[in-house]
Image (cartoon, rainbow, N blue to C red):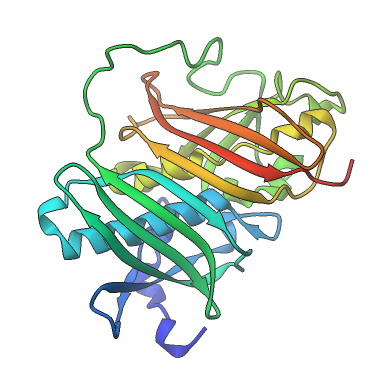
Length: 298
C-alpha cells in the first residue's frame, strides 16, 4: 500500500465490544475525478476464514464505503441503504489496509445505483454493484415459516466456535462475533455425510449491535456466514466464490441471527448455495445466493 492509504488506526479502532465497526469505518481520500470517491479502510485478520478474507465481510466494507459516498454526494437520499449487492471476486486480498473506489451510476427517487471496487496493491480484487433503496420497515403481507424447528438462540445441539473447536480454529470471524453451528445438520463434524444444508447462529458484540448501520452491515455479512454446504457430502477445503448476490430486507432486531443454508445442486465443478438470515423476531433480514467452486479435496 502507498503512504496515501495509511489509515489513522486510533481513529479506525473500535471499542473492544464493537470490532465490526472497524470494517465499516472508512476514511475519505483525495480523488482527481470528482465523479469518483476513494476511501481507505481496514479489514483485520479477525475477519478471515483460514488465511482468506471472508467474502461477506468484504461486501459489507464495500457497502459502508458506497453508503458514505451516497450520503456525501446526494444528501437528499441519505435515508437510503444498500438493499442489493452483486459481487464478483477477482482475487483474494490479504488482511489489512484496503482502498474502496466508488462511483454513481444512477440517482433516483426510489432507487440509486453505485458501483464499488475493493482495491489492494493497485489491483481491483472485489467489484460490487449496489442497489440502494428504502428498507422494508412494514409488516409483511405474507411470510413463510422460515426457521422451522430452529430455535431463536443456540440450544443443546449448538457447537460454539471457540478456540478449541474445529470450526473456531479456522473461522476467525468468531473472534469478532458470537457464532455457533447446529450439530444436528452439520453431520460432517461427526465424520458422517448428509444433505447439503447447514444452519448456525451468529450475534454481533454489544457495541456493533447498538449501532443501526453497523448492525445492518453485519446482517449483510452474516448472509455469507455458513460453511460451504458440500462439506456435508465430504468435500472439504476452500470453495472460492465465483459470484455472490446479497439482499438486505430490513434492519435486524437485537439478539441472535439465525443463518440457514441450502444447495439445490452440487455438481462436479460448481455448486450453488442459498442463505437466509432471520432475526430474533422471526423476520427475514438478509438473503444471499452464490455460485462457488467445489473444493477438490475429499
